[in-house]
Length: 92
Image (cartoon, rainbow, N blue to C red; front, side, top):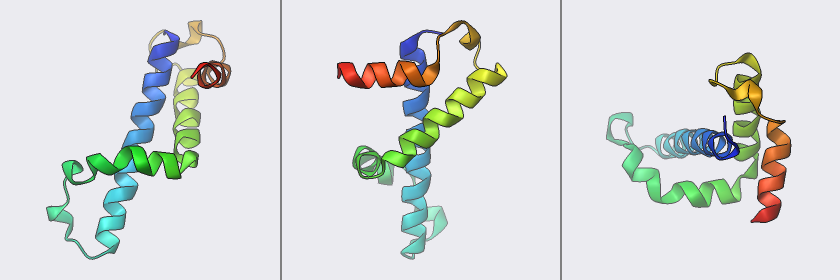
């Protein structure tokens, strides 16, 4: 699995976690469950991830765990996932 695929997997998982948290926040504010759609929170995902860096850390750990289990096809052929992320964030 290529470095970009691993980064994409981590970001996808982080977005899923953010959507879940944002939907829960809306439910806590009293909006009925059946009225909350992902499209209602799409605009807030990037901001939520920016304010909560722990989400990306959690997503990275989950994807790394999946990679070690072999759940991601071909992932065992890649170098250490955490090292890839830290190297990519330095380049940006």
